[in-house]
Image (cartoon, rainbow, N blue to C red; front, top):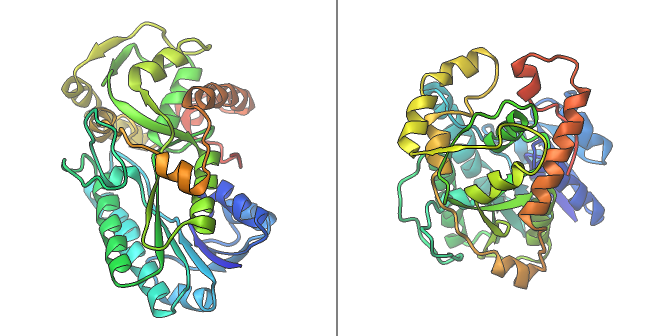
Length: 348
C-alpha cells in the first residue's frame, strides 16, 4: 500500500505515521521543509519525504500520482488569531483541502481519507449525537469556521464520487500538545493555573493523541467510502477534568466558576501580550467561547465498525500531566514562555 500523507509532522501526524508504517505501508510524506527536525523525525520512522505544500497543487502532483491511498491530515489549529492569520488559516485548511481532494479525484486515487473534526459539527447541547447530526449553532472561532467549510468541501467530493472516508477526531490530548488544552496543562503543572474557571458543565470528547492516530489508521484500513466516523473519546465534563487535575501536583486547587462572558472579557487584553511573548493566544475570546461549547458526540460507530477502542479520558489525562511534569524538569529556560511552549518531543 502506497500512501500519500499530508500533515505527517504535526501533533497527530507523528503517531499516525507510526501506525501506518506499522501496517507495512509505504508512506510518502508531504513536508514544507524536508531538512527540519519535525520532517527528519518522521523520516527516521521510514517516511519518504517530498517537499511541497497543500496550498500549491503542483507540488503534490508527482508524489500523489500512483498512490493507493491519500490521507489528508494537514491543518492549522490555533485560537485567538489576528484577522490576517485567520485568512492564512482559511487558505491552509479550506483551500488546502480543496487542492488535495481535487487532485486525488483527478488522479483517480482509489482510497482517500480526510481528517476533519467534531468541531465541524459544532455545539450539540446535552443530547449525545451521532454521524447523522447536522450543525445547529454558528462557529465560535476562525478555526471552527475553517474546519466547517473544509468539511463541506469533503462532503462535496463524496457526492462527486471520490472514494472518500471522513475521520472526525474530538479533543485530542497528550503530552507536549500545541493546542489550548496543552498550554493550560503546562500552566497547571508549573503551579501557574489561576483560580478562575468557566463552563463547568461543558462536555468534551477527549481522546489521546495515540488513540486518535490509531482511529484514523483504522478508517484508512477498514472504513467504507462515503462514510464519516466520529473519533471522539468517551465524554467528560469541564468540572470532571479540572477536578481530576486537582488530585495531582500543580496549580491552585480551589476555583471560582465565572460566566463565559467574564472569562472572554478577562482574556481579551491578554491576547496581544501572549503574542508578544511568542506564544499563541491560548487564553482568548475564542478559547473562552470554545470551552463553553458542548461536544457530546458518540463514538459507537467507530467502535463497532472499525474496532476502535480509546482509553478512558481520565487515564489519559493523568498520564499526560505526569509526562508534562517530566518534561518540565528537562526545560533549561525558566521564563514563562519557555515553560509553556511545547518541546517538540515525539510522543503518542
